[in-house]
Image 1 (tube, helix red, strand yellow):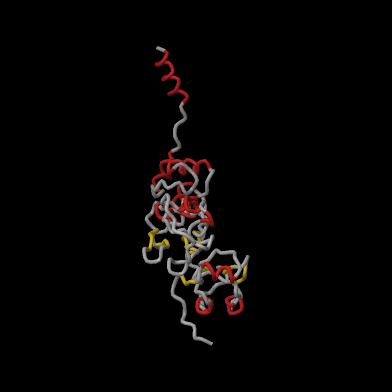
Image 2 (image 1 turned 180 degrees about the vertical axis):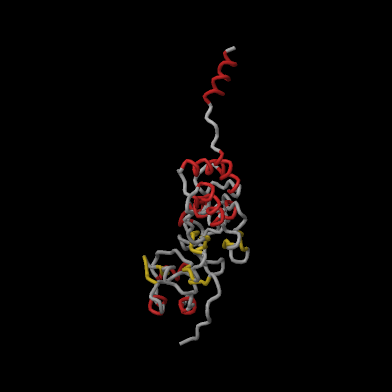
Length: 258
């Protein structure tokens, strides 16, 4: 009798579910990746209806999902530029010197707590054990056996940022998909020390800063930084960089040597 009474009361005081939750949930991709910060797509749908999250909270769905969610909620979709992850390291097995051979748990985070931050002489470089690849829920990352570095499939990358959280060195970072050139080095060491550890690292020579026609490159803590808002993809920095740590993410014009 007590159980029946409780069930009756539960039915009477139950709050009917908001039909918008189901409608929003149908428009989410169903990846349940957790990149939005909520427990799966169901959790995000509830947060969106309650106004606790913005329509563009689902990075996996992209602009189309943001627009669809905003339409259900009667809001304006604030769609920003699509972001993709970039590997800010070109220290391949051939170019980056190793201090020792690592024999331990097959995980970048485990190797990073070893002396020197891992087996590579550059303490800022990619460890190369593929923890980011294992963490990616969209199969957008793979390891290149020839270089020992992760490779990003920019078409599959949703910009969820999960891999950036798993990388112990912080070399995986989100950049605008339209950014034509990126500095693929995160070393804060001075030039001579960089050269001893990796032939592909930024040596802070400043040549890219001086040669950039748009004046959109600056040196920050011994490493070049390209302001994506000012870069027009002319390709001068890619051509002039002596260590080739500035790479093009898309086709750039061929620059004639001066």
